[in-house]
Image (cartoon, protein in one colour):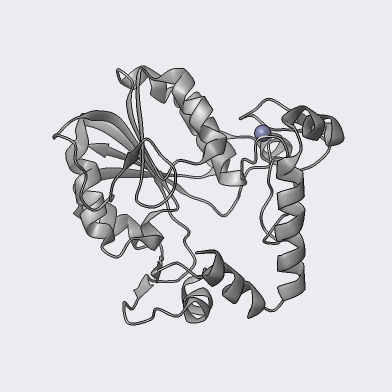
Length: 256
Ligand SMILES: [Zn+2]
């Protein structure tokens, strides 16, 4: 995985910047949380996920990324936090929560609110090692499924969506995010080179680039879908202060 990442970085338009950011990120990560909170302390910005007051978010790795230097949340993580809070989603279930490919920045937040938290990943560290295309849980086992920026890596995303729908109870909520970067979804399983995948699909390990027609795949899997953007749940001041994304859509999906 690191070799493919390195290969894609070296073929990118800014290889030295990518390598510099990679090293800088490693150094910052090695510092204690309290040091990072002190180093980046400020009044102008606030990370809602970890509650830190900050002088800025970090544009590490990609020009459009804005990391919280304390908890490493990205713009989309802070938007997800806001969605759960403002739509009071926690009140809707008994707290059986499936977190697919868990992001460390959100794990603690989710666990605070649920009684039955399960994380899974095919490759990385998680409670359960499992493929999202074949979930080993009974029908209706969960109140929530959260799966963010995963499906663009999954060979058969329709199978993953069918499985997510199956393991939800009737009325259960799936919170799904994918990068929308194409006018219509493009995919080609014959393209396997990291450099070509980065060029066509946006990242060295993506297997497709989604367009807005992603919503049709969700509906085809049986979900009722409400696309939610930052502007729908936050004011302009909050979007600036919390470092929220304007180009991200959360697909708030319900079963039944
Ligand atoms: Zn934070």
